[in-house]
Image 1 (cartoon, rainbow over the protein chains, first blue to last red):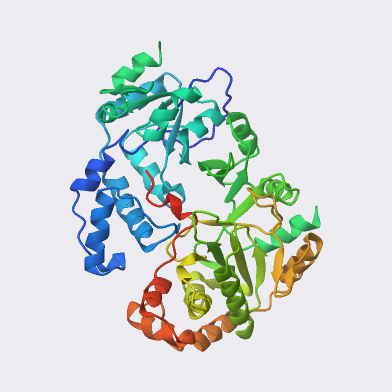
Image 2 (image 1 turned 90 degrees about the vertical axis):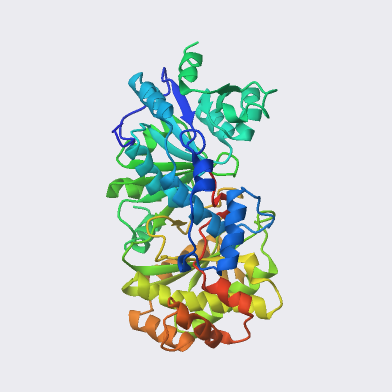
Length: 204
Length: 293
């Protein structure tokens, strides 16, 4: 692998230690960025100003889209705002250290995100590179537990509620940031305050 | 070489060199090794919501390896999607999809109206398309005698797509039930790909039959139709400009100031809500992933 994370080297699952790591609200402060960043109204959003502010409030609150339609005016707007946050979000210092620690010990690292990489691939790869976060492969998956099971990945670092709830039951050890600990206290997933804790757990 | 692979090579001559998205249920590091063993670099992968179907965007694919992938495509071992050239193309496509999260594989009445309207519009304008049943909708391909700048293509495609959606609206349906994406798209260069003709749908396993007004053609007849389409492109770049003028006059639909007036010129009978939606840049593919994190 190169420093930018491209996959040119030969790989084999035999004897390779595999781990998958989410980006948003795991390696970075996505939600905090989304809520505190001012997004001034511009014509580039192709929306009336009133609609812009109504949609922005919904995006900041992570309100679900009640529509049965896949592609809507709101879904496009939400993507635009999220894409700005992909660039602006700050990496956790202990997360960067953890990822470099994994690489130095020859772990095979999958970045596994819900982002739509068809459009967000470039900014995602740039952000990882700019923050010195090494990886081997970049994947998007809505169901990360299904992804980990399919690829034989035993460890997942992720804040997603479904991963936390269902991962352990499907044989995937899930580690999640502590902010969700209260609501997920009854699951077998492990909450962490610092990425240093994961270093210990995956060597147990 | 399999003549079908030769056809796909000819069809793909203007697409981005060395880039493809491979769609398959195969996965794992050993498969990735195999996929990249003859050259190429994985940009990213996707696990789709369809069982374990994966998509892999591979770049820097050597020519002979691309031929191998095409062969696997016609043999239905995997599906190959290709990327339009970011500057100019001799092929363009309207991608009409059922825009619903649930029951998205059903051909809804709105789709029937839209596809017939678009087919009729393009034929009347001298740009007869090749229409492929894609699973959730249709790929409406047009082929030119030579490459045309993407901006120029887009200025034609936008009002033509509006005509299709106008027919849905005029019949009393909600046009938003049909999603129309334009390829190449001036704002989404290198981001979106389209599955080549000759594939089986990843979820249903159904072949990508050619659509005609009389119904879907069988697999053999579909390949014959595809061959005719590839070997004999009939539309010149000038014909595209003339078709756009017929649709919207001399205005530029990509300019907001001209948009509403031009849209009315397409076929009339638009509601104001339709105008803003139809002229909004189209969303990409599976909208359920918009804004995911």
